[in-house]
Image 1 (cartoon, rainbow, N blue to C red):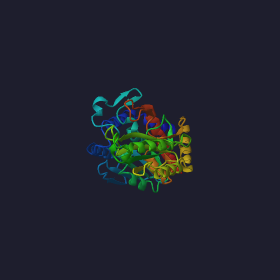
Image 2 (image 1 turned 120 degrees about the vertical axis):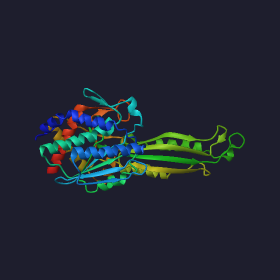
Image 3 (image 1 turned 90 degrees about the horizontal axis):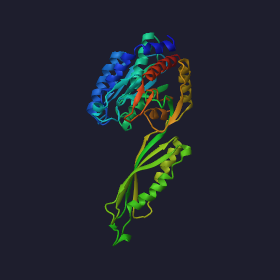
Image 4 (image 1 turned 135 degrees about the vertical axis):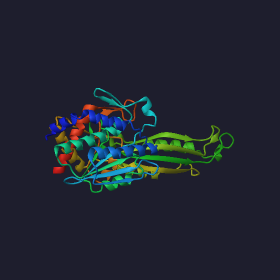
Length: 381
């Protein structure tokens, strides 16, 4: 079966593909609702077995307060490939009541449809197309996690373990205006806590050491770390402190978001945070938090993997593009281990984390065909 025939087969199952997507989107999966996440993963277990058959091996690992992690292994030919797809969304329970799954022509909307439920449905139909055609795919390890939107605190070690022997990692996050993501920034989430000495601001100001003054000085130094040319941004997004206008502040804090495009820049920011010292020796500064995601750099291996995907897309008549983005995903963890990573293989659409979140049905069919043909080529590599 040619690439064009793979796409035609998938297009011929458009109604079933959309029915699958409707059922999936109609399950609410907020990252902080363990009960709803468990219900959704139970449904996914049944769905995957119905559509793909029983895996050769499977394991479900508890996520504690977060969604559980499911890992399914499917046999194949050649070197193993890791497939990543999270099932949690940013949308709270009850969102569906005012915003149900809706299809209008090529336009599909609903909470989580773009980020990233359509991506998993596309993958399933890509594998069904290969099976229907009797075509090979590599040994596949599919990992589903329910905590990606909050930084993958429970699933990170399992993602890193699953990526250990992978020749390639494919991430079914949403595309960036149709482009694949071959670079992602590393993300640091820090909280700076400032402790001063309280005093009456009018009667005994000299006896005080202002935590807010320390915060203000630190904010300026932190923002000076931004280097747009190097891809580094440092943003103090939330500050709080003090107890009254007539009190020298005894405590203050600042929440800081850091994005970097290289490990060298991450090291520079780390060094600057470690060097922060209070202006007043009676005050103190404590830095909490750390790097939520490592940098996903465009390595030679990732470049070769994208070139292979581009060649597949060209055979399908598609102009596949790549890009670098500021957001992070679970692909960052695999890339930091040196694995070639293609991210953004999911839906074509827009509006992640927004009420105008939507996807294209034609885009789903194209991406499913691209995935099928790429997996077939990887099996032959």
